[in-house]
Length: 301
Image (tube, rainbow, N blue to C red; front, side, top):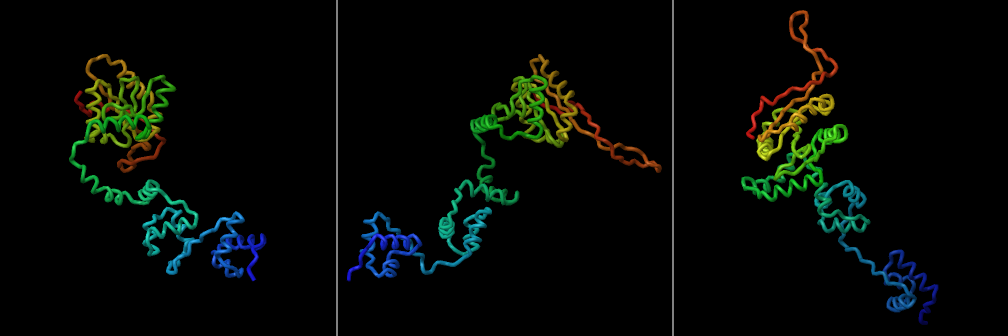
């Protein structure tokens, strides 16, 4: 006797399909022809779900651990080696678990973050070797400097603080990372004074690229003020000396550009002789001071 496909029968078949059973399995369990069942399901408005059959040789692995390690930042390549399966299989397992795959940029960011400084250097070694010694196009450097000014990248220690003080307290016009040819001025004050901030040590001024930049700015008509300091507190506690030097350069009417170099630091101890006449250091509150170091440096203007 032919099977009657009642509404209740069709609804039950659809529920079984939603549970993950394939059409042939549903027809066998309900005792009907799968082709006839397919026809009546579609007549009732139900879509036939074509469940993909998993390969018989599909490798069993801990998919929960796989997902956890991927979310934690492990790369697809790392997971493929760890579980000894192909990378596209890792991608498939992640998609099946509802995980959105990282794009190339996101993956590379995580990769670089997990590398040590030496590993990053080794990774870039071949690229650096390929361009080392080749002259860079001037226009490329100019465009880079303009971009740095726009996005305010490469802001150094103390630049935001000093810019805020000069602008809001003393009324100067300040441009951070002002682009001049291929260079960026840390702080351009009143369109004529280039303020360069050097942290930690005075010896950084003698670095070739820094000397080259300062001499270019002098030849371009800017007065240059180099402020070297040990830490942020040194700027705050010597701000009067900083303003004095900036005002001095602002009043310069000579045709030749001028420069100033000052060193702002502090002492946190005092030296005394002990009972045996030996020098000893005694800890004391910080005493801030500022020294004019202009005479120690010679730049061609």
